[in-house]
Image (cartoon, rainbow, N blue to C red):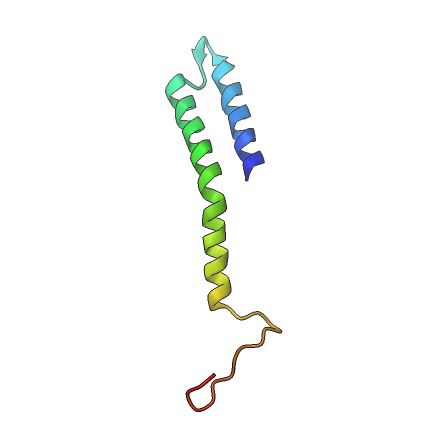
Amino acid sequence: MIPRGEVGLIFANMGLTLTVAGIPLVNQDVFSAVVVMVICTTLITPPALKWSFHRFSRHTALPGDHLPVRTNGTM
């Protein structure tokens, strides 16, 4: 996910330097918002993916997994 953040920063920086009829395509406020969002998504994504994968693996048995067999209330 980090390379995507870098690409977002590159495009935001390019937008900051571009002008249409003398008006900047991206102003400082929008650029700041993009930078904050890139930082947030770069920092939040790895722990969120780890949590999501852990939650998925706990509730889903994959083919070939051996689950304990319950007999008479004991495992």
